[in-house]
Image 1 (cartoon, rainbow, N blue to C red):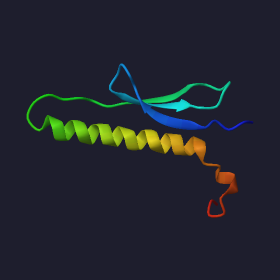
Image 2: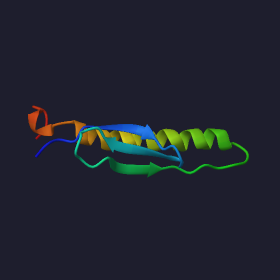
Image 3: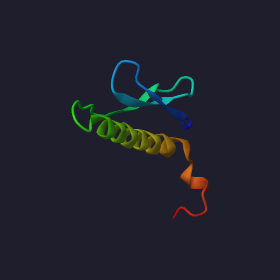
Length: 76
């Protein structure tokens, strides 16, 4: 089975990060990780934290697709 190489990009229309495949012939969108946007006092800090947390989750999912754990020595 061919491995899917992925990357993380921000959605053009939604408040979400997308994990998309770069391998030709494979599924393009692997996952969508949304985040909430708030208005009001302290909203800038909360929105920045939510966006950063969603990005970390998206990068974790992308790394899981891009890493071949069968070849790692410390994986057991």
